Length: 298
Image (cartoon, rainbow, N blue to C red; front, side, top):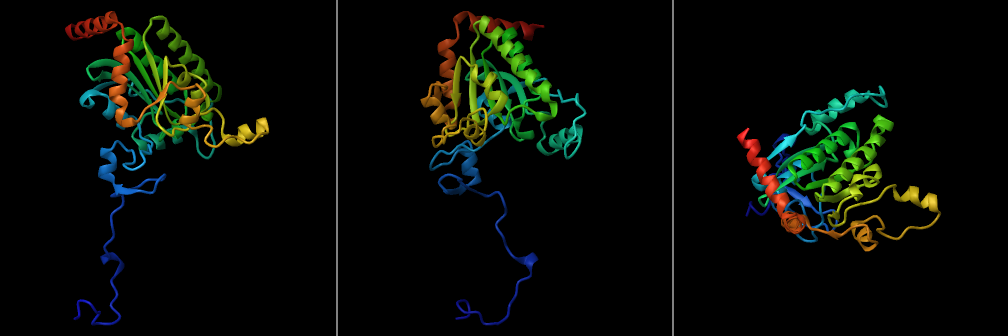
């Protein structure tokens, strides 16, 4: 039977006629190696269906998860970095910014917006690791500061989603100034008794960890997130001791008292809503509602 045996010898199929599976149809978990379709992986909010490993996602995905019907108003969306130091490494800093903006579709490493989470008003700032490693430059600090001002003005809670490699070296001291700037703004938010929730995702390191990421009224994290200041090699060389396994994981940080709880991404929206309903005062809800009505009337 020729359909079981090759009747003709030496048949060769040209490369252009060979059938291959298109890229991007399947996802293989880096943790448990489970293979599933990309459609199923996205449906599961970019977490593994088997072991719940959390893949890195950006502001687009977090906004879609959190804001009701993915409806929100973005703040300061066209704010972009300058070149205060005329910095050049392998390419001039302005060229690096332009090429990164083109490849990612982002203006900088953070997006800020306000909208509703389960009908509760909220202001959210979310970092994007895809933009120069989520590095903290002047624009990142300024947008976060303005988002905090917006939360104070509308008396809405503030959520910061951190994902960063630390300060942006191309801006040197200007970058480091953002640590003090954002911390001072958060102090004003605290004085007005408005809740600040800090969500630490993979990775949260450097100057971001040393400033606004750890200043929340509630510090929460996703499972398995890398959280720390310096890298393991630098710490080991500094203290001259071997480090415990997984010492910069969210679970280790929680065990040692730097986090309030770890939350699965699939539960994030509802848990966030429950948390806000417990800490928001009735007058804050009333004031926020009146502010919105006044804005519509004007």
